[in-house]
Amino acid sequence: MYQELIDKLPIIGLTLLKALLIFVGGHYVTLLILQIIEKAFLKLDLDISLQKFLTKTVNIVLHIIVILSAVTALGISIAGLLAALSAAAVAVALALKDSLSSIAGGIILLVTKRFKTGDYIEINGEKGKVVQIDMMHTVLKTLDNRHVVIPNSIAANTQVVDYTSEDMRRLDLVFSIGYTDDVDKAKAVMIDTALKNSMVIKDAPEPPFARVTAYSSSSVDITMQMWCKTADYLPLKYDLLEDIRKALEENGITIPFNQLDVHLKEIEKN
Image (tube, rainbow, N blue to C red):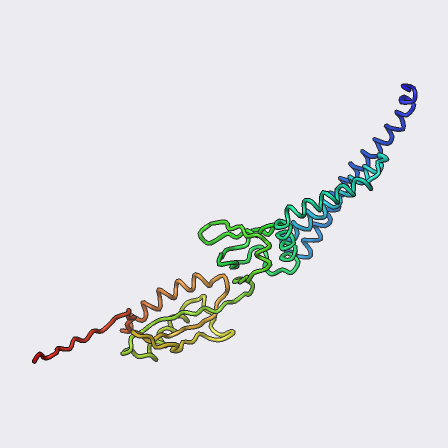
């Protein structure tokens, strides 16, 4: 018995060596393939989150193939192993159906490119810059430096507003003046002030303009529209809110507040 075992040792050793070579060689071949894929991604200019997702997927699939090849080299049948793994996968899928829904949502987001890393978006009332799209979550960084983690199942099935997908944005501002003020003068002051700001696009797609849009209870509302680069949207908004109010006041145009006039009527007594 011992002699038979000793006689089989060279065969066992060769089998183990073969399996080890397949495993080690397959591992380094996988790393080489991943390097080639990463270089190809750079040329294709893919979203960084999509690159990471595809790289992880290829890495996992190739290593599974390597492991199964090494097990086969040991003379072990993988049919039973695959059956057991399939049964386990079904059980896991039932237990983690919500998580799998998020994974499916992540794949949809990365493939359809509804938004990409670096975009400033709004999902479910949360606004922020996309810092990461992984397999299960989309992470936003808000302007006040909060991280908002949104499941991909929600991000893929709800309305998404992308504020930075275009190079230009239209800025709309509403200013109120008194009923006794000169409307034409107010509009001219507003447009002249906007044109003095270097962030305002002077001509394309259309020059800044202002029109009366409402007659409120205590004021005449004038809406002003102008175009700017997307990156300048907030700085321009804050600048014009200050500059136009100052310009209106310097030109004797009032910005009224809500007020109520009460008239008292004396009732004669008999």
